[in-house]
Amino acid sequence: MERMDYRLLLRSHGLRATGPRIAALKEANQAGHITVEELCKRITAQIGSVSTQAVYDIVHVLTEKGLMREVRPVDHAAVYEINLHDDHHHFICNHCGRIQDVPARDVECELLAPAEKYGFSVEATEVTYWGTCAECRAKMKDGAEPHAVQPQAA
Ligand SMILES: [Zn+2]
Ligand SMILES: [Zn+2]
Image (cartoon, helix red, strand yellow):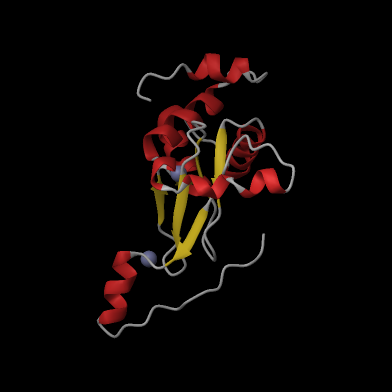
């Protein structure tokens, strides 16, 4: 998604196309997954100083309107990404908080089957794989056991 019309995207979701909102979408699109803190730095670099609280408010509104997705690693800051409605899933490392996209095509379709059983019609599927990334696994082999944290119920 190189050439996204952020103005149009915001307006089509009933939002005013303000400079900080456009900058937030642009930076999130370039970054993939980004924390509010990092987003704040990049927006400031792009259009001038903006407060962390303002960026929190922006990502909150954009997430609420379905333009951004929130991903919450355990014991790490939440990260945000542009919501492309591609139904991709996430692998999240319980040790370092690393987030890896998992394309929907890599996930078995049978995953959707239980919806019918419970009378649900599914519009989107979100799967989170909690575990240990390759880098942390390598560190464990070296004997430096990373501190494991248990995912908490949302
Ligand atoms: Zn890791
Ligand atoms: Zn993602």
